[in-house]
Image (tube, rainbow, N blue to C red; front, side):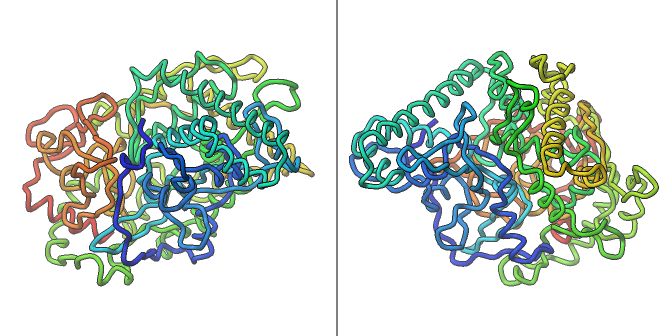
Length: 576
């Protein structure tokens, strides 16, 4: 991976920034952008993060690593408030060293602060069009986390190797008058941190031949979580697996009311899903040692509950009010009236009829229609509880899309230390059991312990169900216009391409650009420095399936669509 500034993409500053009306006030949105989940994604404290300089060969400072303009080049969205970290960065709580000890400032002895990513890092989107930047809460991010993690390591290496950089770093962390003994202790901490990074790098190198590049806008989230908890946290190198199934970050509006979440419909309980995400992006957890310490973590279960409630809204959705909480973005949002081209009403009306015949059988009637709320896919787990949307899981062999994500969860095996009391070796059930124990430990450790009825409420009134079917979930298409690229692995750049024959879909394209195409509904895909080449010939990247053809076969889900029909469906999807 490269971290030189010349190898990073550069974009013009937007002339205007617009946040859409999605049911949140500005205070709720601001809180979501930086809510501390207890993660320590970068393995260093906040005080180091803001003191490091950008990597690059120079005897003088290249600027700080935490500079919003620099992080912007990796896709992290700058916060408009002065001196704020980018959207998706959170800091708070006590930083822990890789060994689990409190990370202390060598000069003052004070505990340092943790820093990590939160939900918004992967679920906030921007689209630029004619100089305006449109920001969408809950939409897939367009970040390159892997590349940034490599640049962070380079910044640490260059700090350790370059005396001038090192002195500047010491002065920022310790103060310009810090004594030699404190400086030596800081360098010892720096070398120890690099040792942790080198260990991870050795594990990555071991499986590199089987891994698939993630690049902008994708992560192999489930395998990353598995590597974190079953390899790094348990110190079992044999459990480290390649990242074989990067997925496009999913949109998260409506999802609080889905019975099963994830692309493969593998997780039932929202708390386990969210706590697993926090562990996967670096919330420290104790998985060895004294029995009464096992499963203790920095995961902020209370914050995860608050995030889920904010997404879900204050009451269950219904036909009268629709989805509460975070709502899908709307093309007809008044703030976009003079930004995006107007919808062609006649073409959209034709598309509405095509949607009913071509799309509705799987994706349900449009959200907001009586037919959607009357669907037999709505179900109650018990007579007193709310309804959830039990979305259909389409077998991977039928929809024909790349099978790697579903197969990875179904096929991966892990070793589990006996002390953890987890008997499963299949990755999915073992992960669900481990994360569930972490959540229970948090409940038990509160003073007083969280009562059973409150636990049930915080768990979303759903059991810790885990399944690993070779299938993919189909969900409503409200807001789909704001979520390119498409398919679960992001292998199709525009909606027009998705409605076209597989042979006409781009075989290669570049990801990471932000310029929106309001006609085909996608992002610009031309080659440019620092962008990610997406090669759809590689397993994990396949752009097959979800095909429209008059010739039956694997992956064919509908009849051939003429170009004008594709345009009509797209015009109608803009209205959802």
